[in-house]
Amino acid sequence: MNTRSTGQTALNACWHLAGVDHDRIRQMPFGDRQLAARIGIQLVFSATFLFVIFVVGLSVGFGKDLGADLGTILIAAIVACVVLGLDSQILQSDFHQQGIDLARDRGLDDGAGRWARFRRPMSGALRLVLSVIIAFALVRFFELRLYADDIQRYLDAEHRAANASLVAKAEGEYDHDLAQLGGRISAADDHLETLKFDLAKARARALAPSSEELELARLTTQVDELRSQKTAFDIEAARRDGDAINEKVGIKEKEGQSGIEGRGPLYRQATERAALARQESIRRANEIAELQTRIDAIRTKKPRPPSVDAASVESTLLKDIRETEQNRAEFVGERGDALQNRETRIASAVRSHPDYVPLQAGFIGRATALEKIVATNDTAWWFSFWAKALIIVVEIAAVASKLFFSAPTLYAVKTALDFERAVASEIGTYRSLSYDVRAKTLRDDLALEDLNLKLLEKRGTRLRREATLREMYMNNGEVA
Image 1 (tube, rainbow, N blue to C red):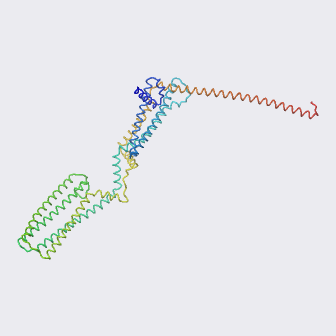
Image 2 (image 1 turned 120 degrees about the horizontal axis):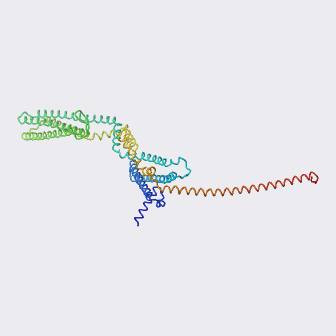
Image 3 (image 1 turned 90 degrees about the vertical axis):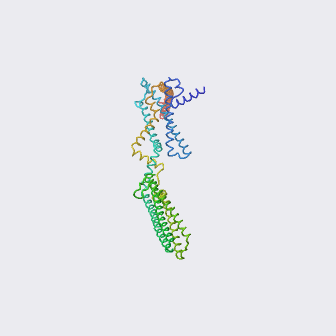
């Protein structure tokens, strides 16, 4: 019983949305009831579709938090209910107009003009205009979500183009600073070579030309050469690491670099060569350690402290070498850090410039970008066109099917004729009351006319008496 009651309630709701009187429609044939229910279901689906499209579209521009989402849902629900109510009114009016047309085609003379037949097409045209307005308003919001990635790429391209000169200037200044660091490293290398050469000469002068001393000098020279080679391999490894970083981030600093971001062949080649240079540097370091062990053994076997001057010179040279190597290591570390963070620091420098143009990623900027994409891309234009057409078709389907494709229904005729009879009855009642009022008014007018005639007669009698009395007075009391 509850299921049947619920079903009847739902059916009454569908009939109500379709603009029909559910008490009257129950008395009509099954086809009329089925048509009204089907129209009501179509309106429900149409309103649901409109609500979903509104929520999805408006959430792009306004859905940023829970409050905004709830507001968007409320607005979408209000708009869907307003349109649903308008459709119900149009359908209710159309049932009456369809009944009048059917009765008129069968001989009814309702006194309507020739333009009465255009009311139904005019209703459909007005509803189509509303659907077009809704479609054009919603599609833009829907497309903002659909083309989000394309819009972002377009905005990024415009942003890069607007700041291209600032980026080029910042890159030039940054690369100039990197070149200065490279020059400092080269100067430190040259200075180290000179200091090591001076150290070797100072040690050679401080020692007597014995076989152990000659061997010590030879080993020292080899150590110096190996250190020079190790330094060269360290420089080569650092340079190859810089090339690998450039290839990874897509920087073309010099000829021979691809300038393509990623771990491509040149990146792998630079990485392999850097590893090879480090291996050679480690091998040189091991050889230096072995030679240094032999040198230490020779010095331990035959210690011969140098003279005060020679020891002072050697100490000074060693101190300069350590300081120079430390400075060089700092320069290399600074250059490596600068290469690794090149893009980040350049971007920071560009953003801090007074002429920097920020990314226009707000709602207006995204909407403007969408307009340009649709205007310049045929695929986007056609998709936008068919999206609008789909919204229009789905949104107007229920009303259009009733206005132009519904079969004649007895309900429409009965509704129209009942209305005409009720109007005729009201008009007859009004006319009867009007006749009574007019008759009473006429009787009152006649009575007033009679009263006026009596007053005139009395006035005439009085005037005649006055004339007689005046004549008697003129004739000394004798009547002529």
